[in-house]
Structure formats: C-alpha cells, structure tokens
Length: 239
View 1 (cartoon, rainbow, N blue to C red):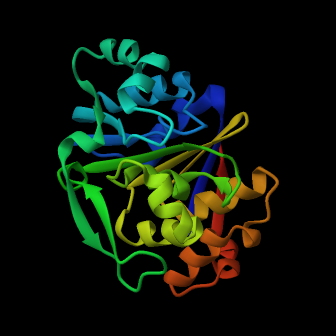
View 2: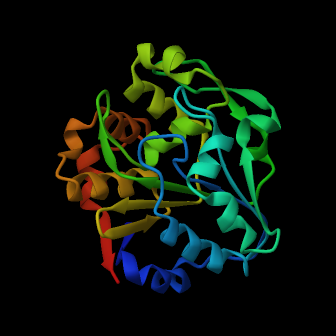
C-alpha cells in the first residue's frame, strides 16, 4: 500500500506527527528553486520550524538551471532572510559547490551515467519538494521531474532534453531516492514516502491522466509493476 497524505495548505503542520521523522544529523531539502514553480514560502517555513527540532543541520539546495543561478534565486525568493530566522541551523547551498560523482544507471533508457552532487551521499534524510505545473515535454512537472535539478551539470537542458526527458527522469529515479516527497497542488499539500504514487495522485488532482505522463509509466515499469497496479494500491489519507 502506498500512503498519500493530503492536507489543506493552512493545516500543513498537522501532518508532521504522522510522518515518523526521526532525529538526524544532516537533512537536505530540494525545492524547485531554479524552475518555473518555486515553493510557497509559508509552507517551507512551517516545514523548517518542524525540522529544526529533528536535525542538527538543514541544507536547502538546488543546481543552476539554464535560466537561473541558485544564489540569485535565493535572493529573489528571500530565502536568505528565511534562513536567518533559524540561527545558523539552515544553510542555503548551490549543490554544484560540493563536487560530483558519476553514477551508473542500471538498464538505462536514455543515459548510462548521471553526475550527482556528492552531498547526496553525506546526508541522513532527503526531502524532495515540488509544486505541480504543466511542462511542454513531460506534460507535468512534480516530484519526479524535480529530481532533474539534482543533476550536477550546468546547461542541463541542452545536454539531456534531446535524449527525451521522460526517459531521463526515469533513469534519475533509479538512483536518487528521496526519503520524503512533498507536492503542492493548488490549495492542497501532498506528502508521501513514495515518489511515483504521489505524482500519480498529484497528476489526477491537476487534471492530467497519469497514463498520459510517460515518465510515470516508465518508472512503474522499472519497478516491475504496472501503473494500474500501483494506482490500485494507493491509500489516500485526508487530514
């Protein structure tokens, strides 16, 4: 069974006691800082207020996109101001600054290796944060598409989009495994440990048939299960 919590935006804090998040040394948050759909700052602040009691250090990071530099977006979104409220416990980082390591993709659809920031191998808990939106080449961008921002390459668009983004996303999903996924859909916030299940539900709520989103179909096949079978095993918990 794949559990998906759905909560009203103004009730977001109510879900935390249900998530069973332990205490950790380092926690990484990966919002869509450099994309078209950045996170709601009130939601992010509420999450940080909870996490500061469960982590010694919280990193908020992304990599440069074709359009944006991470540091510039931190200023534009007032994230530096937000981080100051937490007394040095929250750090903002361009994930490219940590260096990278090439990871081989098992049974690749588009790429044999993908460079990943080394910090992903030196954290204890990884939270993937996305806001659903439309996308010209993948129909939707949500939790799975947000993982593209993990790829440690400048000019990712020109290097990977010609290979087929749905295939690239499914390749990334084989090696990058968030512990928790959060997706904003209009006035609702979805939370789940399963990245595919949360995107299926988010897609439906956004008015898109998940069977028409190729990377959802690919990721299901890579798990040796059909998308229909996963849908039948999804448990929605409204809070």
